[in-house]
Length: 119
Image (cartoon, rainbow, N blue to C red; front, side):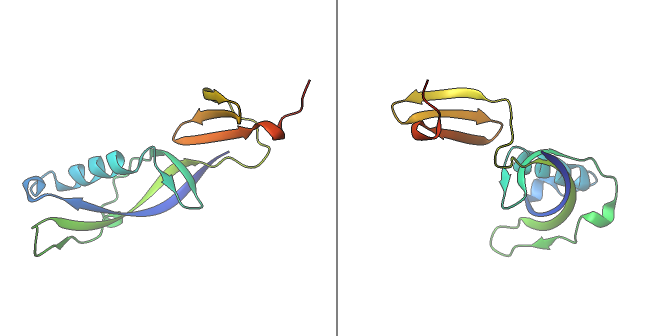
Protein backbone atom coordinates (compact mmCIF):
# COMPACT_ATOMS: atom_id res chain seq x y z
CA UNK A 1 0.00 0.00 0.00
CA UNK A 2 1.19 3.54 -0.74
CA UNK A 3 1.37 6.32 1.84
CA UNK A 4 2.40 9.97 1.96
CA UNK A 5 4.83 10.39 4.86
CA UNK A 6 6.77 13.26 6.43
CA UNK A 7 10.38 12.17 6.88
CA UNK A 8 13.73 13.68 7.83
CA UNK A 9 17.16 13.08 6.31
CA UNK A 10 20.64 14.54 6.77
CA UNK A 11 22.26 15.73 3.54
CA UNK A 12 26.03 16.26 3.37
CA UNK A 13 27.05 18.72 0.67
CA UNK A 14 30.53 19.42 -0.68
CA UNK A 15 31.83 23.03 -0.64
CA UNK A 16 31.84 23.21 -4.45
CA UNK A 17 28.01 23.38 -4.36
CA UNK A 18 27.84 26.37 -1.99
CA UNK A 19 26.46 29.33 -3.88
CA UNK A 20 23.29 30.78 -5.37
CA UNK A 21 21.83 27.34 -6.25
CA UNK A 22 22.40 25.77 -2.84
CA UNK A 23 18.76 24.76 -2.19
CA UNK A 24 18.48 23.17 -5.66
CA UNK A 25 21.60 21.10 -4.97
CA UNK A 26 20.30 20.03 -1.55
CA UNK A 27 17.02 18.85 -3.13
CA UNK A 28 18.87 17.01 -5.92
CA UNK A 29 21.16 15.23 -3.47
CA UNK A 30 18.19 14.37 -1.22
CA UNK A 31 16.39 12.73 -4.15
CA UNK A 32 19.53 10.83 -5.21
CA UNK A 33 20.19 9.52 -1.69
CA UNK A 34 16.64 8.68 -0.59
CA UNK A 35 14.56 7.49 -3.57
CA UNK A 36 14.56 3.70 -3.84
CA UNK A 37 15.81 3.10 -0.31
CA UNK A 38 14.08 1.42 2.62
CA UNK A 39 13.25 3.61 5.62
CA UNK A 40 12.81 1.72 8.91
CA UNK A 41 9.14 0.99 9.71
CA UNK A 42 7.94 3.36 6.96
CA UNK A 43 8.64 1.36 3.79
CA UNK A 44 10.36 1.95 0.46
CA UNK A 45 10.68 5.57 -0.65
CA UNK A 46 9.20 5.74 -4.15
CA UNK A 47 9.40 9.49 -4.76
CA UNK A 48 10.37 12.64 -2.89
CA UNK A 49 7.68 15.28 -3.37
CA UNK A 50 8.84 18.62 -4.76
CA UNK A 51 8.77 21.43 -2.24
CA UNK A 52 9.51 25.13 -2.48
CA UNK A 53 9.43 25.81 1.25
CA UNK A 54 12.89 26.95 2.34
CA UNK A 55 11.93 26.40 6.01
CA UNK A 56 12.06 22.62 5.47
CA UNK A 57 15.83 22.80 4.98
CA UNK A 58 17.66 23.38 8.25
CA UNK A 59 20.62 25.67 8.73
CA UNK A 60 23.85 24.10 7.52
CA UNK A 61 26.56 23.04 9.90
CA UNK A 62 30.07 23.04 8.40
CA UNK A 63 32.23 20.08 9.42
CA UNK A 64 35.68 21.13 10.59
CA UNK A 65 37.65 18.20 9.10
CA UNK A 66 36.12 18.03 5.61
CA UNK A 67 34.57 21.44 4.94
CA UNK A 68 31.32 19.72 3.98
CA UNK A 69 28.05 21.16 5.24
CA UNK A 70 25.38 19.06 6.96
CA UNK A 71 21.72 20.01 6.38
CA UNK A 72 18.74 18.38 8.11
CA UNK A 73 15.89 18.29 5.57
CA UNK A 74 12.22 17.62 6.36
CA UNK A 75 10.43 16.32 3.28
CA UNK A 76 7.28 14.58 2.08
CA UNK A 77 7.62 11.30 0.25
CA UNK A 78 5.45 8.62 -1.29
CA UNK A 79 6.39 5.35 0.39
CA UNK A 80 5.38 1.79 -0.40
CA UNK A 81 4.84 -0.52 2.54
CA UNK A 82 3.63 -4.04 1.75
CA UNK A 83 1.45 -5.76 4.34
CA UNK A 84 1.20 -9.46 5.12
CA UNK A 85 -1.10 -11.22 2.63
CA UNK A 86 -1.21 -8.18 0.34
CA UNK A 87 -1.17 -9.10 -3.35
CA UNK A 88 1.45 -7.19 -5.36
CA UNK A 89 3.01 -7.50 -8.81
CA UNK A 90 6.64 -8.58 -8.71
CA UNK A 91 9.33 -10.00 -10.98
CA UNK A 92 10.58 -13.53 -10.17
CA UNK A 93 14.36 -13.27 -9.91
CA UNK A 94 15.54 -16.64 -8.52
CA UNK A 95 14.00 -20.12 -8.36
CA UNK A 96 15.75 -22.90 -6.41
CA UNK A 97 14.96 -25.97 -4.29
CA UNK A 98 14.07 -23.83 -1.26
CA UNK A 99 11.45 -21.69 -3.05
CA UNK A 100 11.57 -18.55 -5.16
CA UNK A 101 12.48 -14.90 -4.76
CA UNK A 102 10.69 -11.89 -6.22
CA UNK A 103 11.82 -8.30 -6.70
CA UNK A 104 9.47 -5.41 -6.13
CA UNK A 105 11.25 -2.02 -6.32
CA UNK A 106 13.98 -2.07 -3.66
CA UNK A 107 12.50 -5.05 -1.82
CA UNK A 108 13.34 -8.69 -2.36
CA UNK A 109 10.45 -10.93 -1.32
CA UNK A 110 10.79 -14.66 -0.72
CA UNK A 111 8.33 -17.52 -0.85
CA UNK A 112 9.64 -20.61 0.90
CA UNK A 113 8.68 -23.97 -0.62
CA UNK A 114 6.83 -25.29 2.46
CA UNK A 115 4.58 -22.17 2.45
CA UNK A 116 3.10 -22.98 -0.98
CA UNK A 117 0.36 -25.59 -1.45
CA UNK A 118 1.38 -28.69 -3.41
CA UNK A 119 -0.69 -29.66 -6.44
